[in-house]
Length: 501
Image (cartoon, one colour):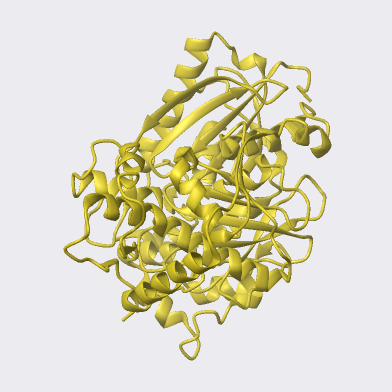
């Protein structure tokens, strides 16, 4: 089972970069390498990646990590992978060549497809089957768009040569040998983001496949999140056969890495977007307040565990937008310094609905706005409004989760790059009126993938052993008066209404 080997490896294939990590048995990071890839914007509202570039970047970060650390592939008990979810690749199984660029989860081109699929204009008409609303966010409509718009693809779909995968499937296929040899799988967390998997049976849903006009032969086998799927190609980047044994969509991986194994445990990841997940146990909870019902993870043959999820499209990427498009700051870290120049937002609110609004509103027609500008407003007020927008959106999801699950969330575990921004974390605690807890190891997403792989090979014995590795780094506690909190909430609510007009 390779459980006696000293290290575990994990790939984190994200929206803006790909990283490879090596961890020891105490979940300490011992080596890492990271490379960015291009963001392709062919038209307004469209976001693409080059799948071959991402494949090559993945090879490079693995090679760089092993060569600089001196760690050999034979030292690795297994490889896990976590990935940007919903980002869609369709390729030829014989050649490995993609038919089109990967359509990224943020892309909004499938709006018309979603509206056409809606029954009686109800975008939630398939909720009981898939746990999701019809939205440009998910993979199924993206597959349909690629099939409908790429010349000659329908013939290859019919012949069985054309296949689909999210980034996990794409990379696992290549790592295990590619054309003629590659393992063609996904896990329940990624399959659950396609709108094509029945969340109760954890199988591809025939009715949804028919509605989307996606034949099942295009789709990978659905497996558990922690299982040995296959082995890396000995002629490939590792130069040896290493078990590929963990597969989790990035936000579920963060939940796993935060050891949120009990019903009622919740975490929020602050990255390109912002994603709050709540463990709801072995029974899917259907949301009445605009949240997604999604598989959280499945370990081996054990029952799947589910989560409620609230997704925010624009969080850290708004800071990047302020930096790159407006030139207001030169580095992302400067946003906190600018925001500290003022005591409050000065009445300025920023609703970053660049891709519409996700949970709990699900308004694809919403647009980004800045409201409350006066002669008094300075750059600091705008910087603070940028940060506060993430916290306000998270609060809307937090409150929806409490209603859906009928629980009171007493604290919030946080992770992701934006948690280094202490002003944001304090404001998040203030506006939620609960403690916000940052763990010692903030690389919870890739750690979750490592945990899943390690459980499959016996590197770690059980989830109880994983809990030992989690520890607090810092806790922020509320320090805002109820009156001020209510005033800020009202201002945000008015801004949301204007965004949706």
